[in-house]
Image (cartoon, rainbow, N blue to C red; front, side, top):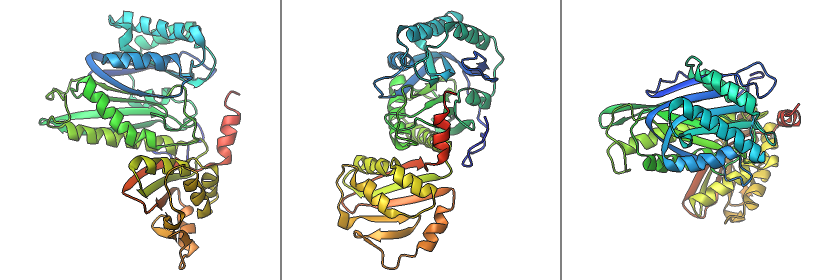
Length: 407
């Protein structure tokens, strides 16, 4: 990884999770000198939940992942980097079946308990010979660190991304560790990247799915880099049950709220890291929308602002052009009243009641826009709906990265 994003965060110390063993290997899906296959072995009895892209041109990995997640049980995860294996027809399906069968034979489990994700160029079948050799190497490799696993799943990522959290369930502390990749082709329509969360908590698959779906709605589905939803987006949560806590089966169980809070926290921090590594990003932007007719309406308005090239380039240029924010609110297709609209940068209101503030002084706003973390607020004055979304600016770097992506 080179040219690290100026918004990067150092990789944190993540706890070992009982029942989880990560390994990496080189399948050489591209001509690069690095590991590009991550394999994670999971203890018997591991619960699994997942959220997947709604892109109708999704990969075989996503289709099979949805089916397998419905079964609720997992024994292994394989993540390939450098080739998304999407839009590859029966050859793509054969490659995934081969990987699942190879791992299942090694572990003595069903193929449906082996989850596969792939990321990279669309339209090129995953080479079956490289996949077989890469998986074989991973199965016999020494356990690796979480940071190595995170580095291996990256494509245009400039830094490895991870987060951890913990919760108390019935007097027992449970741990969560997670890694994620994502930099471009990032827009909400479930998740927006490849993310994997591991915990030693004992949770039923049904409750884990309920919790992950709720956490996703407040985190991964509230970020965007470029408004493009990937064909491969996947977030999976695995719970090994090795902590020994009383089994969580309902949100009414003691400790369920604490675990949900920990899961929400870890997902939000992972989502922020993806935005901070947005292709070409120089600024991290938080957009808070209040006063909407509903929370979902607020979210849609926030994303309309976050996806506007005019807003994103203005912030890249450190220009307090709040008229572009007005435009983005108005085009969202959601209830809004021009004469009730208010807009702020950081804590400085620049427009209220549909007009520029009489005492508006652009100097403190301009100073705020020179920073790396930008806060923008919109109040619609219509109701109690509110939402926060996160994005990054749009720079020449984004064009350069994507113009040369296959080179």
